[in-house]
Image (tube, rainbow, N blue to C red; front, top):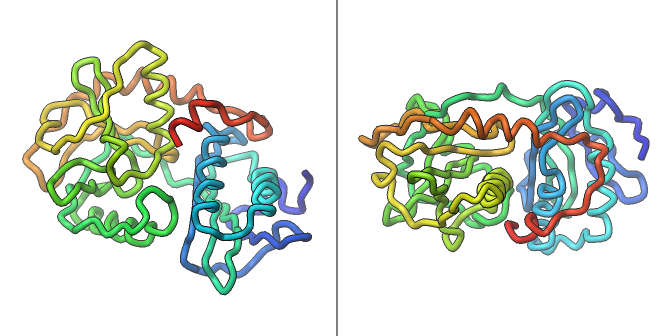
Length: 280
């Protein structure tokens, strides 16, 4: 699909979907989000784009927006206008303005981080819809802002009884010997794309993947990762606010090499596979 915004012309812009006209420039606003999704674009290549597409469309359907006929065309044009050079972190949105509206924000990607310092948040988990990305992003951004004030990069969320959930903008994984552990999906968790890909690959390698209901002190001395689409795999280098020593990041180098090789050109048009459906 051709577009007047192909290449870098759309960089830094907010584009809104108008039925019959496609994507058009609009004035930036911070309307409440009903759904959102974002992914990293590096020189026209992405990871698991069909997974992000499926998660966003499911979130839109759950919101009851009534835009099902527009979603497919919106997604196709949104992908077509993304810049093919440089590093970008676009976000698709369904907003709750006067009427629900589909939007695309084309944003430069922040620098990729290495190790991550994690503040164990003391605030009560105030997410309203933790399994849908978008509605709770303002609160999650505020809680990560508090973490930054304390010298951390991310904020770890826990249940009222201290069980691990996830970080503000990342999923949590850890290793117990050769077993990859993840928080139990029965808890209040976003269905993370990156953690889903890692779990799928671990099983492909014959490794045990075990859902756990776990407290932070049980991670003492263990290799733990925060993972997301922007940064990939980041080993936890410090737990801020808890007397818990981090483990050595022995597996990170090999797994990051695998992660780098998941990039595919944006023009690749692949159907969502069964694994994507089962994870999401």
